[in-house]
Amino acid sequence: MEIIDAIILGIIQGLTEFLPVSSSGHLELGKAILGDQSIPEESLLFTVVLHFATALSTIVVFRKDILEILSGLFNSTYNDETAFSIKIVISMLPAVFIGLLFEEQLEQLFGGNILLVGSMLLITAVLLILADKAKNTAKPVSFSNAFVIGVAQAIALLPGISRSGATISTSVLLGNDKTKAARFSFLMVIPLILGKIAKDMMSGDLVVTEGAALPMIIGFFAAFISGLFACTWMISLVRKSKLSYFAIYCALVGFIAIVVGFINR
Image (cartoon, rainbow, N blue to C red; front, side):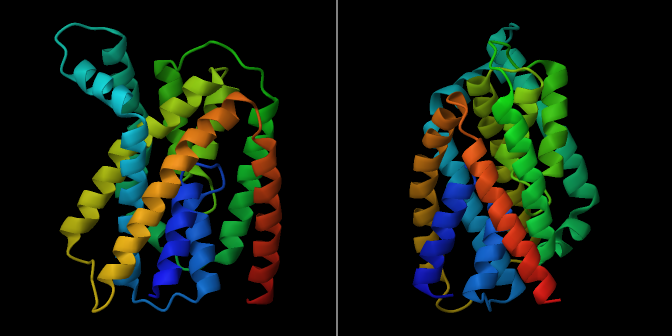
């Protein structure tokens, strides 16, 4: 993999992990456009490195919230932090269940299936339009809401379904405060990303070929820096109800991907 390709893919991952346009879908499209010729194991490792970078940027942005969650988990008395921690755990369950039971089937979908990515981007566009029109409230995320949002996160394992778009939209459509919905969406994914990274690293299937280390390091920093920017920006956009712009973008990219997918069949 060339250094310039690593920078481009790193920026794509950093921006699209938080912006509601599907990071997995854009990585697949990016690899297809750049003609990614790396072996599957090396390509998987690069993806793992980029996801770790965006997870780290989330931790930096929400470091105070994360400390509160951790204190809530280990607090002997039940308080708001404890309740929030339990909600985060509940939200993780659907994705963990689907990820463990259907891991091989999901991995087969990440093979440059442009037609699938395009179709899922259209679904993301619809979700964003619905969420953008929803009225803002001061309602926090409830325990039942946490599970439903977790189901949305599990569905977003499909390439082209934006994880942040699906979870934030679902939360807002459930009547939750938009800013709190964005905060919950970004925090709930951190344990999943770190867990998936640990699992992939321990699997022994990841390969680093000669000359691949430098592009991966550069890609990591590109994803981390762009992730810091996108995470902060996205919270502001959700609060101001400007998700419709991303809906239009997802619809356009989705239609183009579908056309290209049919042409290449």
